[in-house]
Image (cartoon, rainbow, N blue to C red; front, side, top):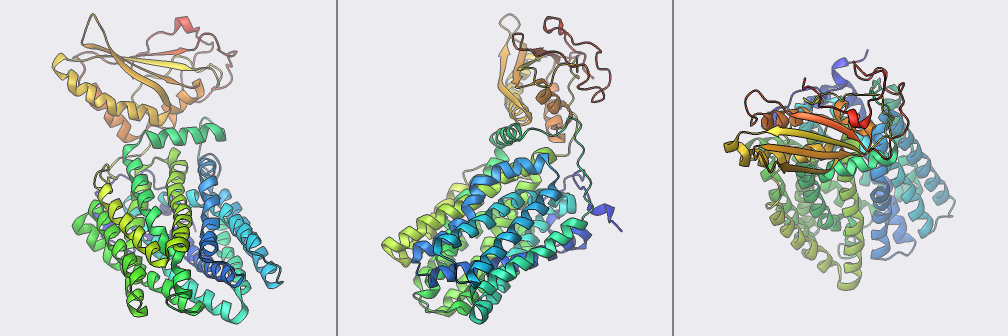
Amino acid sequence: MVDVADVHRDTAAPRSSRSDVRSGWAPLRRTWFRALWIAQFVANIGTWAQTVGAQWLMGDLGGGALQIALVQTAATLPVFLLVIPAGALGDILDRRRLLLLSQTLMLLASAALAVVTAAGAVTPNLLLALTSLLAVGQALAAPCFQAVQPELVPREELPMAALLNGANANVARAVGPAIGGLLIAVAGPAGAFGLNSVSFLGVLAVLYRWPRPITPRRLGAEPVGQAIHAGWRYVRSAPAFSSVLARSALFMLFASGLWALLPALARGPLHLGPNGYGGLLAAVGLGAILGTAVLPRLRARRGSGAIVPIAMLTYAAAVAVVGLHPSQSVVVAALVLAGLSWIAVQSTLNATAQLLLPTWARARALAYFQLVFMGGQALGALVWGAVADTLGLTAAFLLPAGGLVLAALVGLLLVPLDFAHDVRPTELPWPRPPSLDWAPDAGPVLVTVEWKVRGPDIPTFLGVMRQVARARRRTGAALWGVFQDAEDPEVFLETFTVSTWHEHLRQHLERGTMADAALEERARGFLRSSTVPVVRHLVWAYAVPAARPDVYPDVLPHAHPEPVPTAALAAADPP
């Protein structure tokens, strides 16, 4: 039977951040979250076995520190290049089917790598090419996997779901490399690649059975190009989400050095074989397990805003110790601390990103989160690999450690982490357009809103309108402005343009949130008594396509049977 409580949690009201951390294992009580979590755990084990196999194979093929680091670049750069259109696809197509496609592609790529390796036909370039093909599948999957989390658990459990997902990857980091090292010792790298291809079968089975309802779209799916542009516009106009992206970018640029150069450290100063390298990664996974137990209590006491800079500084200390100390036991202890700090930063930023985003923009905005995550890894691997070849391994560990200290300090200057925004969907308190019979691509559309404000409240009103401007832009507006009447200083005219009539209807029907509605009500609180905002809609007069009376027959009630001429568009009454 389908657990209806596990499907579509977007209507859950927001809770305080302090209550989000009290039930650490609660998400695993949700049927489909649990099933997908277990399947992803198996797939993550295969992925880490693949990582160990690819990096070790590159060493066997004669690659130096830079070429070994390029394995990580090959695994992340395609995600950097493709994740934005993939996120747009995740919002306009069925997410379950897109995930099925991505997992199938990764299965085929890993199977091909296993075959050519077993046949002795692999070369460094072919290894990098097939690793990149795997990353293409990951690019398709990454935004969707994050975007479906609010459909699997209630909103108040999202921080713990993000922590469990982070622990999933990091516990697999503890198990996968050990299994990969064992397979390399017994069957060579081809064995690790074969395990990875089989590991995708569980995820495919769960996704195939998941009864995800089709997301209703009253106005149909957006074109990919428009969806990409809408995602960028949203991210650019959401300071809280942009702050999460900035923190993630700073962290990943410097934190990636540890993962990129750990194989070279194992082969070089520590004199370890594949099993020993797997043991180092297992230490990181152990730190993640400890983090799963410790972080909820720390978050309850200190709050999410304090966790991130503290974890960054702790990670910096761990990286410095790994680069300086020759003792294997000390390095292992530092890696445990690095794993705990890593999951603290990533789970906190990931959960905050998900909680800040409305349903309509979730996948395309989370694509930017994946962009800075993978882009930071790809760029960091290249930079620190080059530093290692030029200045040596010690410098390649100490320089990113110093960068992490700087990143933690810069983070204190950014917008504080906050996920109290109510992003539940709602129609905004605007009057509905006077005509629905314009062709979808008619435009641009000019919207004007006349506000009559009480004189003493004008400065506060203008401050609130800056926030209103961001809300308008997030949902589709451009060229926003507010003008004061020269003859009556208490009258203000807000103006903004929207690219097409169809895009403006999306503002009305699909993109409003409770937080946006509350902000508009706050602005209305400064109006003169017995007045309301007066709204007008005007369509560009020189490029209006032929009217299409059949385009929006059932989208909104009371549609006019004939298109209203541009010159005749009158002020609409508020609801």
